[in-house]
Image 1 (cartoon, rainbow, N blue to C red):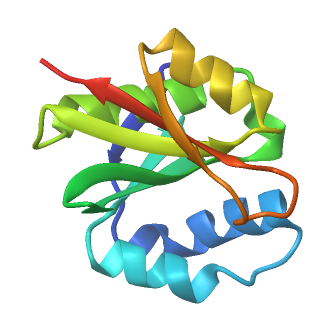
Image 2: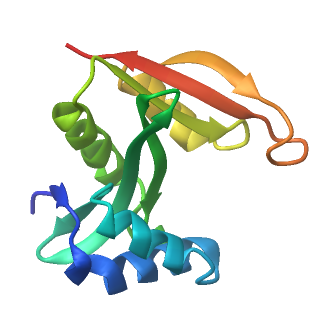
Length: 141
């Protein structure tokens, strides 16, 4: 089966919240996720009609598109879902610049960024104690 990525709608809220809850271990971000869906900043990846993961992208990073979250359900990781979401975001990006970030401890996301041609563009200390946030950049087009 092929992974289909598309813009999320209000109908996707329950599945997106369930994916994030499985990832986080709690539903603390569900209100935030609902707002992101309403603002049309969310994409969802599906296979055979089942939601597998989602991404949030907006233009809040110094006015540039920024992939704020990329979450894949724990049962569906390492199957190309994250890559499909990232490629969709790149394809639909309204700018030639795209940014994202990940914790220094998140090696799978670092590898995905590097595989897709993102380069390190700096880091931010003190967001998570002892785990700096690495900023990645990709020039599109």
